Amino acid sequence: MTETDVAERKRSGDIPLHGPEGFEGMRRAGRMVAECLDMLTEHVKPGVTTEYLDRLAFEFIRDNGAYPACLHYRGYTKTICTSINHVVCHGIPNDKPLRDGDIMNVDVTLILDGWHGDASRMYYVGDVSRRAQRLCEITYECLLRGIAAVKPGATTNDIGAAIQTYAEAERCSVVRDFCGHGVGKTFHASPTILHYVEPAYNVVLEPGMFFTIEPMINLGRPQVKVLSDGWTAVTRDRSLSAQFEHMVGVTETGVEVFTDSPKGLDKPPYPLG
Ligand code: MF3
Ligand code: CO
Ligand code: CO
Image 1: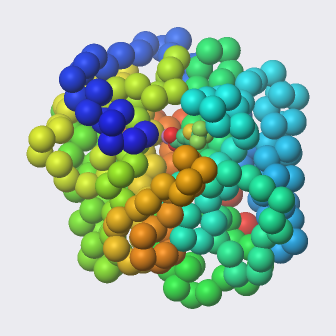
Image 2: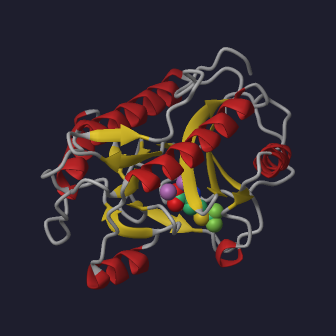
């Protein structure tokens, strides 16, 4: 989501609350996204193109009776986003081979029986530097800490605080220009989930809310710019950036994660690839 979307969400303020049927729909959509990300792990290696990975994801989603949500979304022409090294998010798959040492986020969104599944993970291409691995570890920990802050009565700023405090203690920075979002029957809904503290936007969490947490963490400064293709967001200082994304639901007692890997492949390094 962009800053303009955030402004619109602040005005509208209506947040859907879902029941058991919604939870069931999101479990199924979330599981399929996680399985798609699992499927890709063994294909990510030097020499492979992101266009090839996009095709694999498209076929996986189609063959499982779902639809790729990003395809034709606001003019986007691919199934997945592939964001490599200093690309923060919304990298467009292309015919350039992956190179040894790259780190890449793959973000998959699909629609299954009307419910959106949206998740992303980092992947290592061959041998990755210690710095890059450390950034991925910190970013994954940011996601886990954000999720741990979710329960009824907590607020969206509790999520932001958990993420920002940890990232900055590790001398990294939190991207401000993109955020998590409500998700369900629609792709991008209320509430907005900022990955930093913003007192001007704070929503109290209630059972039945569904949203993503998807922190983008930079080794350098937080500033981002969008390239002339209208999508690819990169760090202004060209520092490395990482992101992980889960979809969660607020339950009566805490949180349910819809996009956990059935195979335990939630973060790199993965056994194959
Ligand atoms: N999946 C991204 C998110 O987490 C959105 C991608 S939109 C696209 O919100 F059009 F770039 F695919
Ligand atoms: Co998302
Ligand atoms: Co996503």
